[in-house]
Image 1 (cartoon, rainbow, N blue to C red):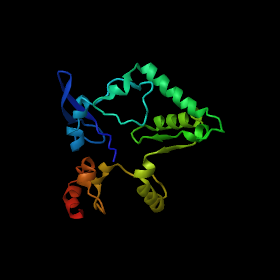
Image 2: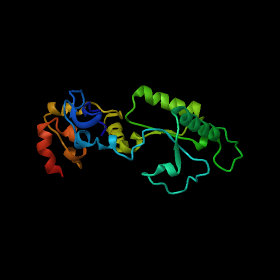
Image 3: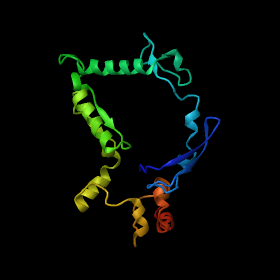
Image 4: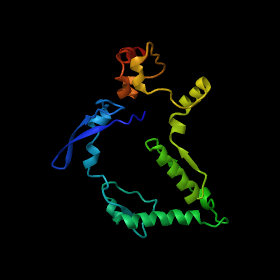
Length: 203
């Protein structure tokens, strides 16, 4: 579940030392374990902080250590990296129909993120359809929400949710089937004392 929690970072000497929830509409100061404690990656030594381009002559099939990427890659500016990526996409898009690989836009695809806004989703599919010349565009919710969308379509005629999970506090009855809300959706689970007390019985 993508909750959309708002966060407050505690910074000391330019490093994150703690995270707290903010009183946002989705989480109201609540955070799951990942949100509260999953910030060590920001300062991890393996994290890339600059664009890297594969060195000339280095095969894309060779094994590369994440701790020593300099053997296969070199640092680049953002402009150089973006130009290189765009040129690669353009080369595939413009490939001749007689090429042994899939021709043109059919060889390109785009996979959208559920964390984007509606406007960002629109721009993304426009990039794929008009920029890549491809209809191969999809969204991650087709996989992770396929079952819930099908059930909603059959039950109420619409694949959209009908209420936020905060509405659980206003419900007289909460039925949990085949789920572990406190483990899978910990922030949502905290919005109802009924749900918190019932969840263990549905494990």
